[in-house]
Image (cartoon, rainbow, N blue to C red):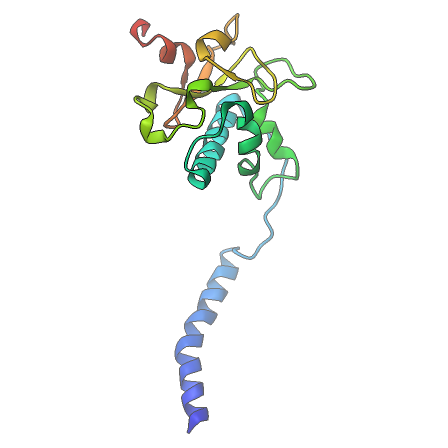
Length: 176
């Protein structure tokens, strides 16, 4: 009767779920993620900041206000494999001398509160760049804030489409 139907339904639908759970366990899906300290290059940091800003954009439908870009993207830089607080290192440029309150990245003021489809040339538009303004939430015009003298190997920026490029090539494409 009803018990037989219940057992048959449970077998038909339950067996595949049990197999899925067993396969997931074997693949390590339920294992605790090993957490580590963050040690990233400036290039990796800018890519992480780009990803965080993309997540912010997907959530808010516009880029953050320039004056609070780090505050706005802070919640989006954390990943499960990092120890608590380690994500904040992504805001610190390892290519400049360290210090309290020294970050080394700035946000292109022209990207403040824009919709990405309004950006004329995302491949050539700096989004976040290495900056001589090392304050938290630094922002401005890339040409006015590029580090002088140039950092070893040249100053870098991540574009509005996510590629890390030489800042001078973005500011002066005709000199390439």
